[in-house]
Image (cartoon, rainbow, N blue to C red; front, side, top):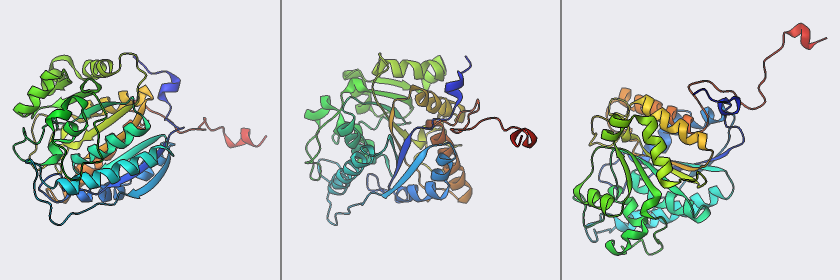
Length: 335
């Protein structure tokens, strides 16, 4: 169905606060700490400004590195992740109290511990759309790897509080969302413990199988309706670039999973979430420019930026910045 004139305009009133989160200690491979740098170098701020958005770059979150950070309860680098997550939450809260939307540039997906916690301080009624190949809701005891980038939601969901030991570095954190507040889109690599958690607590989850069966339009509609039937709650969108097929995000996680979202499907998700007008925060995770060659890096950065733009008003059907009108011929303008 064609969009109305208002819907085809670029979203012009938004003030976007960009926040870099150069972090990689939620997993074992270096490189995601350079995600914010390559996305900025790719022109993300300028391209959002060209959409008519008011963009303020708030710099990078300070990252804490605890020298002796032994695993606890099978969770690696808990102090480093926990203390840095607090700084992320504090900075996200500050950004959101001065801007309309925060765009967090990660960083591995453990950064979502801090981004969601910080967002929830400002928007306690938020819902979470998790766009990812992975569910990232392992508890330390269900995780095979011990990497916290596969656990962020477990630390945030109230129903899982009794299943997660309070780790050193995480003393500040209290769960801030319910299982019913989460909807997954794009899952295709889910661990046994995660599958059990999803079913036990009734989390809305659409794998690539459902995307194939129903189509992306039906999946997005069902996901939004499941977490917010009345269409009133703020949306936290957490986007792991490996949700896209590896042919599009070649410099994402090193354990890429084939059969992911196409670029058209990813665009559709972003455009439909943008149309709600309720987006509170977007965090982008797992861009790793050290994976692959220069061609892989450029493709991943370009595809990621093109998706981000669509969360903030860039539409395939066309759009225009605020104040734009059809130019008159010079002779008419000077009469």
